[in-house]
Length: 252
Image (cartoon, rainbow, N blue to C red; front, side, top):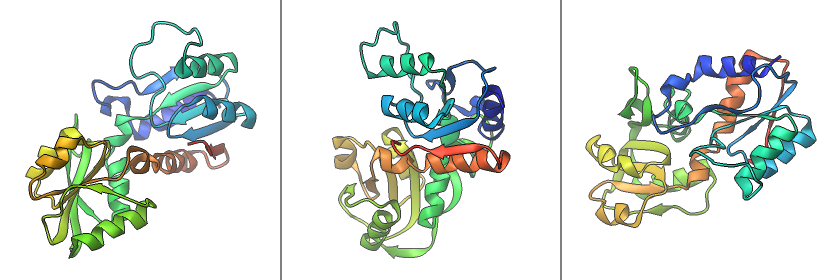
């Protein structure tokens, strides 16, 4: 199997056309014609992840976050990003990312996945994309209203986090929930207008919390909100190539 075959399988499910204009998803390093016998799945492409791929005999890393997000001017081993890319090139490890196109995917998207884990029945997206049903973030309802503090405890249990950053609790119960995996501060106003009682995301700024009105902002952490991307990618590829060697990174 070749790199281009893995790419085709992924992009049949989460096309690059679904990514945001600022993004850089897709194949960043490696030849589409290179042979692949094993793929390593990760959240981020770090030096440790590339080392793991090399030691495991994986010829390709598929991640959620792209290794090259902004333009780089040189590969001179001056920092971790440059060293990671150079090492991948030297060892023939292809690097591919499914980023905001995976975020935007209907049903398979990360926010959809989180909604399913939390028992939220999705009925819309927060920021619509290029096609109907495509977009960043989701909003939906719990089957019945639950006390706010109870729901906050439910989030902690489901995501396996010990603490949550959240704004002042001004609602007694929660039924409508907005979710955006990763950094969702730009969609606070949209989530508020959706009628959400709680908005779950990450990387909120100080004034996001201060300005929160009735809706409760819940910051679960960027890593914690997106680590499930590995499971989603595994599910996509394992259903298409049942006998292929797929490994989930222990370095994430």
